[in-house]
Image (cartoon, rainbow, N blue to C red; front, side, top):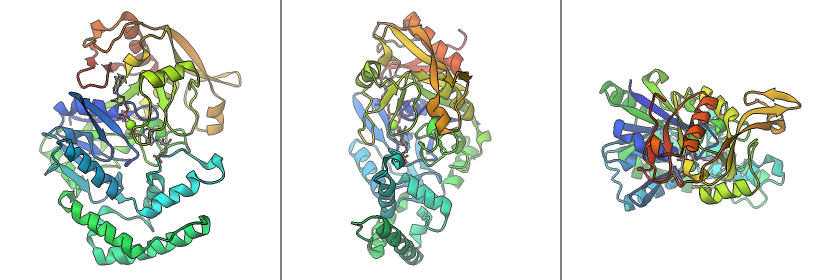
Amino acid sequence: MGSTCVVGLQWGDEAKGKIVDLLCDDHDVVVRYQGGANAGHTVVHEGTTYKLSLVPTGILRPRVRAVIANGVVIHPPALLKEIATLESQGVDFKGRLLIGDRAHVILPHHLAEERLTEESASTADHLGTTRRGIGPCYRDKVGRVHGVRVADLYHPARFRERLKRIVDFKNRLLAAMLPDFEPFDDVAVAEEYLEYAERFRPFVGDATEALHDHLNAGRRLMFEGAQGSLLDVDHGSYPYVTSSNSSAVGAAPGSGVPARYIDRWIGVVKAYTTRVGGGPFPTEQDNEVGERIRRVGREYGTVTGRPRRCGWFDAVATGYSARVSGSTEIAVMLLDVLSGLDELQVAVAYERNGRTVATLPASLADLEECRPVYETLPGWSEDVTAARSWDELPEAARRYVEFLGRKVGVAASIVSVGPDRDQTIRVPRAR
Ligand code: GDP
Ligand code: IMO
Ligand code: MG
């Protein structure tokens, strides 16, 4: 026991990276269990900004070990690049990173396959993905015939032979769909990936066994969710989701560690809502309020640089995802961004065709028809970025955080008032 799961409860970018980094003091191992280089987690410490994508955020703390577990999809060149960047920032990987041999590998044809739909003539088929090959790789994992795992790269003869069949299949498919398609050369791809395998060799191992060894040795694990619960392939705003279980339910299948080992389930939320890419967003503010939030919160994607869509806090969607993710507490992030707004709105229900809807509907068509029912709360004018205790926050800011906790159904334990590790407030329990 004593392990923790940190997930986003919205559509990603809730500042999970900051929370994971903060809680590293109390944990020994940080585990990524789903997603891939579509994630961009930011940590700011003493003026330096670190960007983590495939590498678990725990790598920034010398004492902590980092594990990329079976549920992650790895694009080897992206991982090599990330390791090189972090090393140039002084991060030491030796003996601290474990790449699970059951994780799946993103191959060049996955990126090409994603272009098929994301650049198709029919914009209705565009999901607005990060184009990192995530969806096609997970599709092959579930489809089984064409999936490649890290472990497969260490059997070169078999790998070359199997890749030949896979690439042949993909070339025929892609040539039929893309007029200017240059077929992939399976021999070249095999050699490229076998070279990656050699470079990764010191890091690769059985992550599931290693995690159980850590648990048996009494070490505390932290599961670092990527994306957010509303992007979960089963529980999110399908089909505008990612291709993995990005809510907390994904931690067990994505790591081989049963949920019974986890007793702290932290749901990370922004004090408002953002979304990158397509899909419904009931509380979106495509107006001055949204622009202000984007400007003050610097709401541009870490991975793709796209402007994030911004809007009010949605307690209906977030309450739903807090239930799915089993949140035992929430961390309310970027509270400082709301300073200076006279009034704040929070969606406490939806209305659809004259009827009140209390939870997130399954059907995209139904969700698109939902209009938020807002409650208005007083804002505050003070800059809160220097506040370090609950009592230093303006009364209206405290009331706002408490209101969010009540409406989501889980009280806030942490409030964040700036990107730095220090700009964090622990919320007193009895209040
Ligand atoms: P993640 O993907 O959930 O880890 O979140 P991102 O890193 O993509 O986006 C969160 C952004 O907000 C990052 O640039 C953080 O440095 C920044 N950030 C984190 N906490 C705060 C906060 O309390 N206030 C402000 N203004 N920025 C924050
Ligand atoms: P972090 O971990 C925000 C979004 C994409 C797109 C959808 C599907 O930094 O919170 P994909 O490339 O996964 O197939 O894209 O999911 N998306 C994210 N949005 N934060 C993320 O990660 C995201 N990862 C994917 O914008 O709408
Ligand atoms: Mg992010």
